[in-house]
Image (cartoon, rainbow, N blue to C red):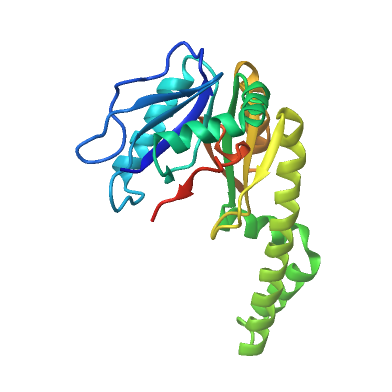
Length: 247
């Protein structure tokens, strides 16, 4: 049976969760595969593995349990190797790389920050700041709503102004938060968010990042934040070369 890989740690990690329940239904038992100075948290890989909520939570729970006692390099959900021997061989082959990453990510956690506009609030901001858009809106109002062409012209002007504000606000957020982190990773664009960033921070000083986010919230009320963390540093770990994405 194939081997599912949760994460990689030092062989001397004090609290690897050997024997706990992992992914699968019924849940599969987590075990530890060691090679030299490294260890991998693994279990058997269920057939037809899919990102179901129960398995996603189980994957994160194993990493959280291990991460509570020391640094763990988290593998993304769906990392599968041929067998335990392949995992051990990968640990041995890339020992220097994994040791470097474990040192670099020691006591580091990830915070994912997504930002979107409050639609009504940003429209008020655009109207207040853009004289041309405001003039078009007033002209239409004075004309009893304006013609179809006038309404289209106003709609296009508003959309363009909002789009420009999205780019401006995304850059402002990154510029303000980047100094509070050791590293930043930008996620692929997703519908509804003007920016989607992951920040690598020292676990002990994460309040600096959270405080900077709160300052922006207070200063720019048309921005809506969704903050998720602390998380294992998924966005700052290369996938294991012996692993492949299941499904």
